[in-house]
Length: 299
Image 1 (cartoon, one colour):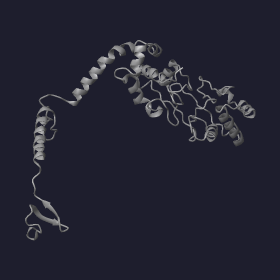
Image 2 (cartoon, helix red, strand yellow):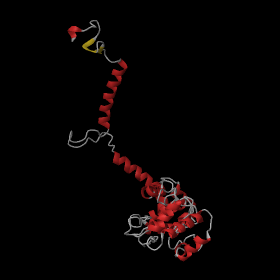
Image 3 (cartoon, helix red, strand yellow):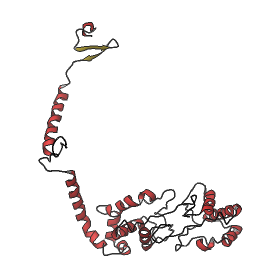
Image 4 (cartoon, one colour):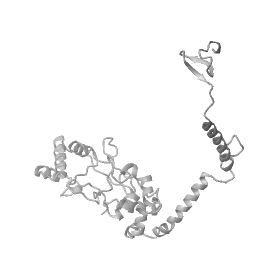
């Protein structure tokens, strides 16, 4: 190629493509060369000061003259955080969730205080996947920031729910809503669904209410349809829907037909709260309860 170089006076390698595309032999800019040598020098200095060379290049990773390690920095940060938290955590151990909630300093520590960890990190690690990062809820999982509480929203009830869970596999199992597909006709199911949707819209259909009373719905949801916290039956008169917000009529009919948490029925709705009392300490449960209560919906 060099013998047939069409640019004989140019400082190129003689490699020519497409008639005029060639590789030149110009040196890099001086500033680039200086930075290149500086970067090499920096790597050497870094390798001397910090651990950098891993096995099997050496028998054991070099420790560095400064003796710095990531795990050491982590432990130092953790110790610093524990120092900040200790004055609060020692008090929390001796108090109930209700007493912590009434203590402005401890309550603020759990919600917003130093090491925002007290409640926020616990909630993020254990609850946010289902209930959302701010308790806003997701499809099939309740909103924690409103005042609609199936099992009660007092601080004591929230502690109980976190500790024991809710549903068939909870520490204290709850049966859920029975499936009525085998005992009610399609017409009755649709009439009840229409009545339930009407209740959430402020309507009260006499014929639907009669069916509601006759078919035993009143036994769990109450004569006023507002539910019973002792049974975990939902309030039918509000506008809060846990399942399928878009098509309320079809959603209500489906729930009446297949029930909720009916084991052995693959079409049944699932509304299960895991038991956290076995995986979290008593102090962590109290902190979580206070954090959830302070979303604004506790009552």
